[in-house]
Image (cartoon, rainbow, N blue to C red; front, side):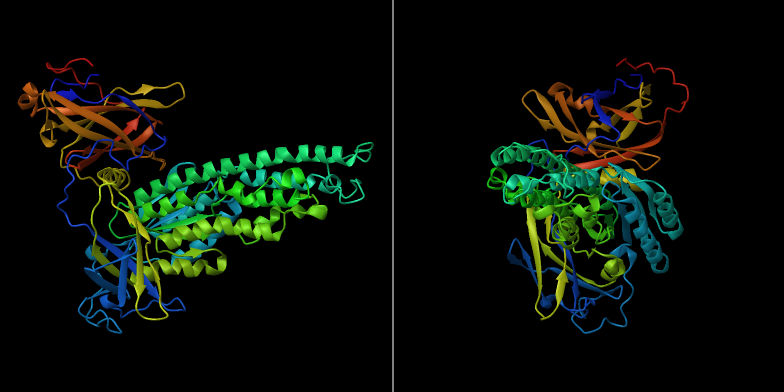
Length: 621
């Protein structure tokens, strides 16, 4: 490579990172912890919304009105303030019935603006439902837009796509919503597969196979039997044949459930990436999640329908447990982890169910043209159960992060209004928490000593590792142009190589002055422990995850002093589409637990300036 010079020490292997690849985990350091002491005070602030029985915010509470618990144990409230009517109430008068007339609007430096991300889950929503909800959003946002808010529009199209960066201008969001409404969601074929499975279940002639009815006449509209089918067969043989027809459907339901669970997990992974992006700015971070809901147990209703339909067939009914089958594909743990991840990053979910209440019942037996007969399996009860299952995840996301959920259009406006009401009316309870190295989950509970009041707040958090903080800094550089670069990290690119698929491979070299890093002495060499975090975004709002690469540093003891004026260099190959791109990089010194971030804008595939002549001290790769 032409840009590797003699004063750069190459410390890492060249790696391949895909523009839209899966994010590498950055939650735990791959290096053993060397320094375990922490000098900083770890103060956890819990924002609490208190309402009366009618949902109206309650003001005038003081520190002594609250009880705060971590992992079930009471903790002392060390920091306290109240926000009432958009004004910070001084602690000296908190506890009075009304905020002081002398209190001023909360300065932006203290409270920060309201950051709202409209997140449309295009992989879990029907176009008609999405566009219907967009109309409600437009009708709400125009009259309720406020000067201290910034709004962003993002979709999940099997990766994060930003349609509009944070903007204080409502017309930019409204334009982006209109353009998005003209595109088609990338919803998988799960709805079609589900309807086909329901029909397959109901089309099996259980009446004939059960032996409980004196007929094998298929004139009830059941498929699978001709008029003379079954003639000459005894009941036992007929039952075996029907059981053989029914068993493959169970296998298909299991496959459907497994694939749907994988899809849910991928959706959660992308939601976590969104949370990391949303955690960047200082202020209230709100994600308005718009979808048709996500199933908690994807196959639970189909499995129950199958069990009901074939309960009369001894070979199937006696050996099938719907609850056990459904529990094998359960996303509860993943959703709890998402909630904790959001709470750790101080992001609140307000969830909107875009599907109308009767959407699922359209997949009933009646609508598919099949007939359940005496053992009809699918009914409105199962449709409602399936609806509750997908809405349960919306409730978990909202309640677990202290937000609200709208499960019907009748509560939509109240939920959206709740974003502003919560921003203007809440209490902040702070306490000193012991910092741990293993980033364990901690539960939070808040009680109010006055009767008849309700509280909403985050229910969990975990300490951020140095790697997580580096991820956030990388996202800040990628989306908000925010950099903090104490190491003086610099980025250089090499010759771009076109690929046959129309994309390009861009070599990127990350350079760090060795004098900025901590090197630990050893018997024969000094060692440093450095991680590099890389993310890429194109001009259409598509981004990669934040990928982590290890860059070990080893210097012979005899070269340490002479190397202090040199730089460490770590390389990575990036596969990108053509056009304008932004590459954000954070370098984490694992020993010092300090990171440095910068970014580079480039136009991939565009003709560049002529390459300068080599310097005298240049050496080939």
